[in-house]
Length: 370
Image (cartoon, rainbow, N blue to C red; front, side, top):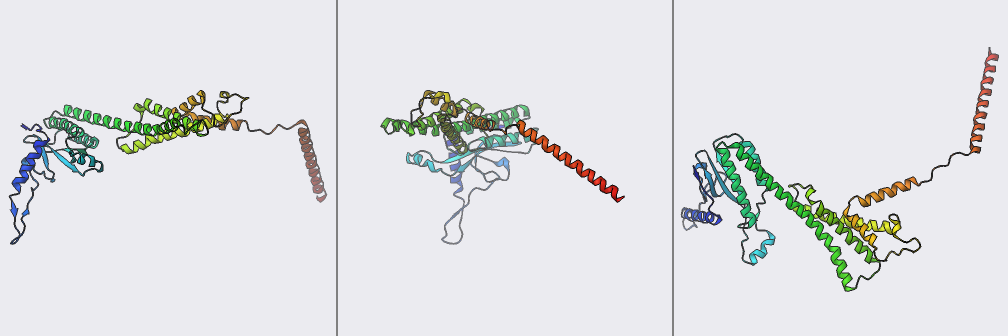
């Protein structure tokens, strides 16, 4: 058995360049004084003839033969991606802008035990790898190292070491899933942080410039900022238990985190309204002193605004309790008085007497008819 160790990305590219230079001499001429037509490399129908820089049977360029034996071959290929829009700054700095993703393939004439499970694990690994990367970047090299480990596990399966190979593949898939879920949780947290910073930046800027003197907007802006800070604190505490899915895009989770800050903003404003209307925590204010909507926030108000943003159920519970209290305070119909009961009894007695009279009259008519 021959095992081709990885020789680096540069070596693979130089070998491919030599193959293209050799094939350029094989040209065809169509008619007189016509430009030569270059014939590119053709796909290899036999996997035993695969080599670095050649094409497999599907037409993919083989970047590197990783492992080869009489019954199988494992090789790497690079899938090219178009240049991203934000790569202009790399091009401006003269850095690498070519994007590509590593792919692992194999060909075999064996059917070892556990190959179906191995294919399922490899499909999960390929789906979890973020393969659209700059060539030579840290993430690009990380993907290559993980696929090397997958190639070793696949070779173990071909050599009938099925249990060990499947264990490596499953552990690798779980590791990549944990990494992707962690990145998505961080994107959710980042979205919450970015939106939570906005009211603080606006408040400190306006207050520092003297534009936000104690007045109508001062307490409301500070209350909203405190509520969004509470929401950010809640996200940071519960980020490990946040349920995410690897199928959810990172941009989607970024906007979801921003929505969490928006909910905290509304909760803080709603709670401050409830407090200043004395629907909640009315003992915070002096009953003899009239409440001014524009007066600065008190310490109790600051705490409850922060708490409203921290807990997603605090303000909804207050509104629900207020609604139930109003239903309980709704006046009920008074019980009937003694006079009403006497009148009711008289009406019942009169109705019974009238009914007896009607029955007696009906009986007399019946006797006369007989």
